[in-house]
Image (cartoon, rainbow, N blue to C red; front, side, top):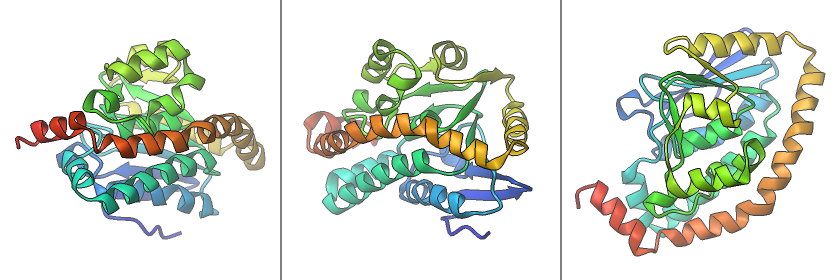
Length: 256
């Protein structure tokens, strides 16, 4: 099945597997408008791909994703239409991942920050390279974490730990992520894609209807929790772009 996506996200067919790659390696797969749109669009297309049984998602190069591109954030400060469209896409991305028919195995090959961290939190099985880490720095930049870890972390780990890492944006090492329930497995650097792909093949060999319906049963817990919080979160994040803290931090990062 052909996928209609921007060039910054690739989907490759490997039998019943689909390998999804974030492909802005020179920018550490930072989320620009094209990649944001691509992530929003890929999961409904994956669900519609009748030959797909399991997907593996990873990043090209040294990072899974370095988080939000600051040029995009500046654009959202300056342009209300872009802000509203991007926030709406963020909501759609979260819901699309939760409702995706196909199990998604994350191969975290390097840093997963911001929205990259959110994609990991919404995946079904998580493999991390030893040197990789998670971080959700929304709050430290001046943003409400509307599509971030706080939506899902309370179901993966304790509410106290979710609060600590959401407030501080502190890096969560691969070993720590596994310890507190944010990752399933940690493997040596360079082996994470192979390990995630092997796990995906095992899932793909299982009875399809049983796998997909069981995923849906489990994700109904996640969907109910997310739908209870996401509209407030998105509204609050939209308001963040009018705060002096966010504007100052973005300008400082961009050297303006």
